[in-house]
Length: 303
Image 1 (cartoon, rainbow, N blue to C red):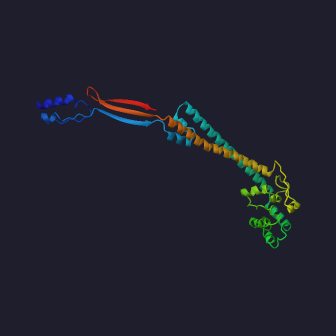
Image 2 (cartoon, rainbow, N blue to C red):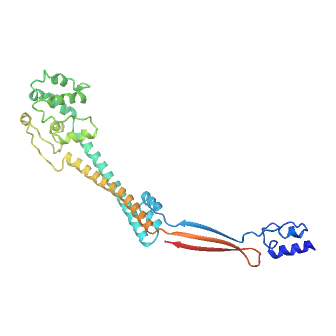
Image 3 (cartoon, helix red, strand yellow):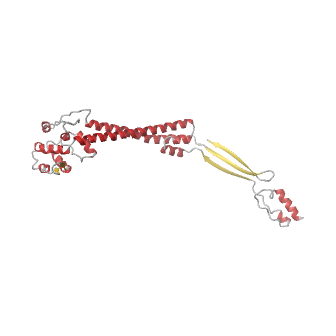
């Protein structure tokens, strides 16, 4: 009889009807069996917060790929802005590549022209021929001795280091204003610059070459008053054209870099001002008949 009463009490509490619960073992003692089952909580809430936009994420995305942060932020206006940043990026990169190639091709062109028409040997021979005119003390200041050592390989090549020593000595004479620079090693960027820029290197050019450098006579050298002749189609003009190409490519590269930062800043500011969070509440409660649980979900958006 006592066991029957305990069983009826357990059935009325729902312990045996709810799946997944452990059935208590009946002892036959009413005072024990009445408290063999302890009711479990019938309601449990969980809370979750999820950010749907993040200023940090938006900024990083656009810093890596301009426009991607705007796309991440979403919305028609942001999509349009994102497309604009992407288009500017593509255009700037294209300009940088195209004009860099133009600059490289133009550089190759004027360097090939210089290699074909300029001779350091011709320039050194001209220096040797006229050194006594520019430096009456060439025999005593060491210049004359160095001149004899400028030529190597049977006189077919020039030792640039020795030539530079002679140029340095001449720079301290009455012709010093004219000999203001030294010839750099062939093939270097400075070499291609000085041979077309400074009058002292004019005589190294092929007489038929087109340059805008100075056509110097011995009389002008004696008075240090060189005359300038400019030709738009000259070697130096070709060098300037190459520099112009590189200037365009450098500007385009600057636009690329600026586009990354502007896009990142705009995306981060917009996301920060429009940040929203989704709050989710999930509840579990037992069914009225005690045969299971029902789930309740509540979602709210906070701006």
